[in-house]
Length: 275
Ligand code: 6GU
Image 1 (cartoon, rainbow, N blue to C red):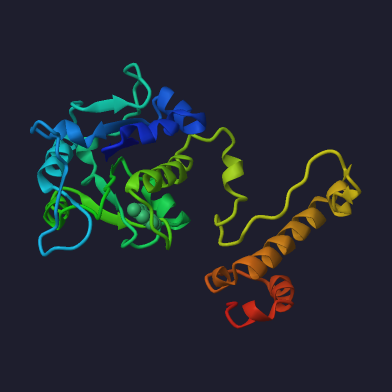
Image 2: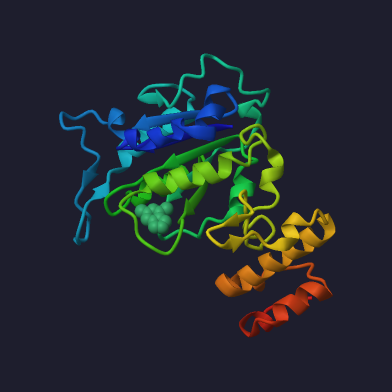
């Protein structure tokens, strides 16, 4: 997968060099490039913002640098690019970008629909993602509208709070998406029993020692009875979800009688649980 990020703070994205994402970049599984928006300005001060028409607080990002940066990415060039890690020409696979549809342009914004695991899964199938990290009050709407002609445009929020810019939000989304790409996570099985994977939060986990400061690991986990352990874990997931995130219960499918009995203990979740 190819990922381009445009930002006035490309250094922000340096964290993506670390850990599993960085390794995927090294191995050529991910082709990640960060572009400095100021490289697409031509005045002495590399101006990227100006005051809003109609008045109001703050500044607005100018259309032209964004258009040039995005056109540059569409052209597949490398001006203003910091390869997060050199890919030393590694082959990223046999997908032809030309055969794919429009690249997906994600514009992080608190005004977008909220990103979640379903969207991460959907995006992990894409050939090319582009993240446009706005700052200040946002980007001139005309270049957003223009971009929809060339990209599959996806404004996206990461939650109901306000950040100073799209960089951290982009990193959140890049991490959530890339770890779903085959080859990025060493043990793909660890993807299947996670919170949000099937709509339930994950069960509590323990490691040695079996007794720690007078606290014992639940007996059943030491029993070697795999069926009983699986049931216990599912019960804990149901309980935890009902307690902490009752809003998730409404979305659940495929609950059996036992599941519903466990959830029955939580009055708040009761009404919303489907067959
Ligand atoms: Cl994606 N961007 C900004 N600036 N603030 C946010 C956000 C995104 N998601 C939640 N708050």
